[in-house]
Image 1 (tube, one colour):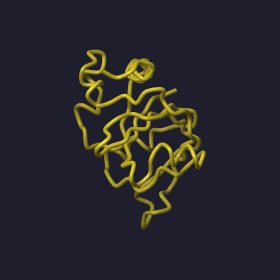
Image 2 (tube, helix red, strand yellow):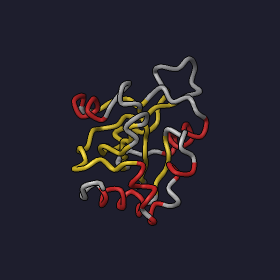
Image 3 (cartoon, rainbow, N blue to C red):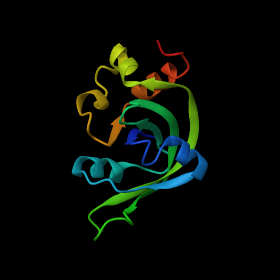
Image 4 (tube, one colour):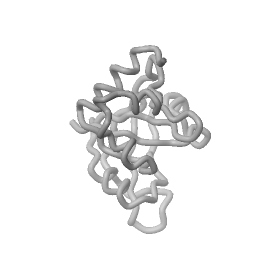
Length: 138
């Protein structure tokens, strides 16, 4: 199993929307590096949903339900999407501030390439974020 973080503007599509819908096509990604990561996702992989914009926090989990397929919102076959199945809402959101303060997350791609909308995580990074989600933020 691999681990991922996907970003979304909550005004466009939030974790609450995914939770309500139960599953969604994670489409509309138009970045070459993010496309490579989408192509590398496999059914069963664990995903963290990160709200960008003003919130800047991980709010919930998901699972890859379907491997990469042609993005239905794209012209041609150059872009891909994956199907995500809603997981659970985190007990406490894990803010960007909390992640920056956590030494175990010093190499997380979110802090290195903040504008990337789909990125891999190590198992330790995923588990650290999940651990932080159980503690009330400071």
